[in-house]
Image 1 (cartoon, rainbow over the protein chains, first blue to last red):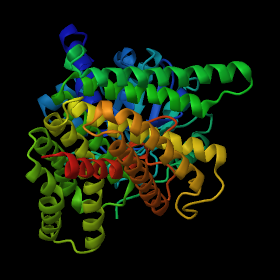
Image 2: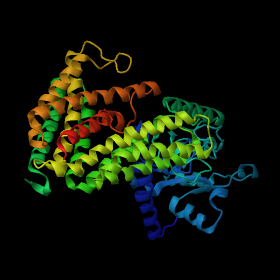
Image 3: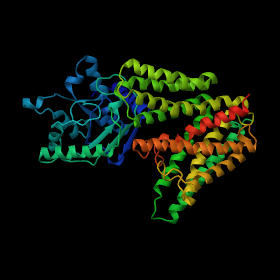
Image 4: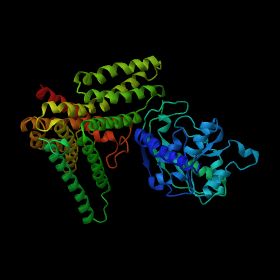
Length: 218
Length: 315
């Protein structure tokens, strides 16, 4: 993320004005268990992923004073496709880039994410990886399990969101207002066994999803 | 006669009275907590706090000026339509149509704002009613067509057409109400309808025994309904001559209409919630539920009151 004060001001204005107007006024979030959100970094917010608005909605849950610490973890191949998109992703959204599939090449694809946690930042990430069919949970990728095992003291807070996949689903550029409900789960912590952590996270997310009674697409 | 900010003096008095009741309600919560330290009275406290926010927003916007007031009422309509569309099952193919449905709100409230009654009264029930089914047919998806058409038309009528009557009353009321203008009529409608909700709830809590609609809204009782309507009628008779062009007899009749219409709106939305299997329409207003839970009685009371006043008191 840029240290240039002008870019930082742009990022603040983008989130304080544009993002909040869209997420909090035009759509409107109903948040359950807000008290379970972390008060400060380091922390991980793990959400379900249906829409391009998911990261912005998760970031709107946190107070603006924590905005400089909020970093969505995002795939390089999705964002770094043009000069403008790269600049926007790095400086306005403030992403931490991950190279998809690079876990098989020997290096640590999550090194930048671990460093961010060490600086006390708050990561916003989506264990499903990519956006799925609207409002359906997919199998979780393993990255978050590795991250939690590497930093076992950092709370991982599961967040289940419903409605954004209807407002702006994958494959559509048309934003249609729908109410969004957000249910926040109890913080989880990394375990020696990465499978055990993944199982508890998936279980927590499914339980949060079940708290919602919501109409789906037909 | 005009008071501060060009607000008619009687409306200023009414506003002061509302805030006095609000302060009284907050004091009751404090006293209850002080006398029973173990109890939190959470729901009552949440409701009272939410009333502060709702009445604060309503009075601030509506008293500021007419344009802000109409935009505020249009925004309530937007919240209600959004809540409704979020509750019902919708088809993905209709997304663009739903966006058009939202667009109907500023247009409908514009007709109200320029006091063009002829267009205001046909725009949703005629033009939108014809437009959306044809658009859906043009998109070509026939699976679930009738349900999509039916739910959208009914939703637009309930959340846009009925609620926009408040805006038209505010704008047109200046022509017919020398006592307190459109603001006086709007206050009479909104305050008494909300008061009626609370009155029916209190009478029902205290004396309720015989259920009115056991399958739809089991908490509604004849005692609550009759007690609430009677209280609203009495308050209407007392306040009407100061806020509306009606004398106390006409005001009492209007109060009774508001009370019964509010009840009908309430049980109609309750039936929808039962059908959809939800308790509240949303979580926007702590202690109350969603915006539709709060304006359900107005969806019936607003058109009923407006057309009653229009028939008997407009030139």
